[in-house]
Image (cartoon, helix red, strand yellow):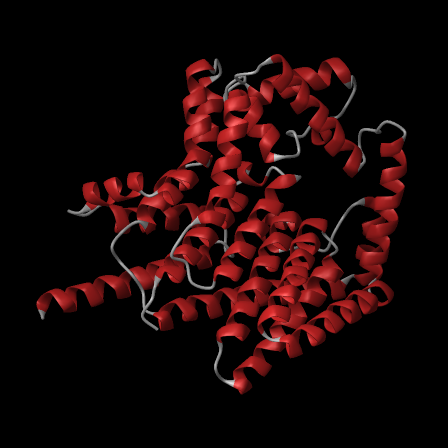
Length: 406
């Protein structure tokens, strides 16, 4: 009886810790770092810690996530700038500690996992409303700013790419809750936040979020077509209707498309530094050059310096804000540790698709796919918010979907 009570108290403590950890993302970088340390200490530093570590090492899924830390860590062997290497390693520590934390024997109830999901939706919605409020405070100026590659202010220190990615994940979570809910009334109520987030992503007009969302809805349509044909028609009709209305209703989306066309005209002519797409292409040229000339990479510590040297040689006079890391995580990891790292990174990011004994297999596959999309043309795993969003969401869903007692 005492053991049961202890387990219940422990799980309740971890439940609250997960809530604090997730909420910290929406507050500040400092609070996120502190909550990560506290959560890791709570779930790892106990008498069964060594056994928990062994369990982590025996689970291919958890090991695959740890590779995002281990690859740049090992590249320190051939890094000259150890100060920069330590900075990179410090940033990627969640990939080391969170897999061990979630490998613990603790498990939350289905009701608790759903509570976390609903809270996640509430936090994203509040963030969307805050962003919309700032937009409506100065509509004309923000609409015009979209012609200069600016966007509506967002949380995450105005990181609109990562926030749009987060909203697309929230849309998936919302859709999951609609799908598994047994109450018709609750299903109807859940459609309201879903529609709001879909509309918001069109208003924000950031490609990462829109591509992730439409990819999910496209796959969801065929999933429902096989499972429940009557709903697939309404979903397809809704997507087409929302897309059409968004194009005609949201000046931000129209202006963003105009800017992309304008930007692309320069890209076709060879790329002009300072424009968004041109900067991305130029950064990929830098990444490809470094990888070609360093088949085993330059080390995480010297990666930034090598990128800067390439820009100085090939794009003289370019300003600091326009010097960016190669705009793909495959290029970043390849430049750090070479072709072996490209293969290991591909394995690490794709392996979760093949994890066994997972409930809600379709939604799990969609989550992994959205996380992959976020790394294709962005350096998502090089920034604190991107690292946490990837690591927390995939481990949260993995732990939740492992639970079998509904």
